Picture (cartoon, rainbow, N blue to C red):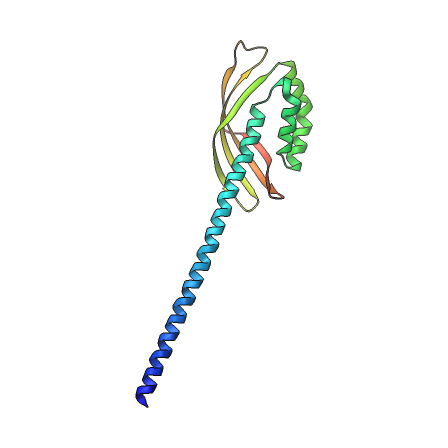
Amino acid sequence: MSRLTSLTSRMTWRSGAVILVVAALLAFSAERGLAWQDERSRVSDEKAASAAATAEVEGLIDISGSTSEADMDRLLEGATAGFRSELEAQSERLKKALNDNAVKATGEAVSTGVAKLDDDRATVIVAAVGTVANKKTKAAEPRNYRLQVDLQKTDGTWLVSGLEFVA
């Protein structure tokens, strides 16, 4: 009887140990899977926020008097309601200045970096280069820009909620 009890005891202990190891492996796998999913989501949000910031900055620095109406429309499309209102309030004055001075500006973003990313908010720093020509210049003059772009995720789309030039 003692042999049977000893054998049963060892089998129970081994079964318990196997079940414990399997449970630990399942828990670890589930945790790693969730962490991987979170990281994939974060990387996707970083790319989307950077792309939205880049588009808005390029729209701002690639603007000309002859195309100012379409240029402003593009800027407004990428803006949140609050920032859109700010842009709309200044758009007529900006378009007039662009036309009156025969401004032709071109530019492109050369680098972006996500400085902050939360669930539905991001801050992206965008470095850009461009040229500006107007009535007073003989030739297009080079420009370097660095902007901080604040974004908000609205209905799955990153929109600009604020934009400022930084040193």
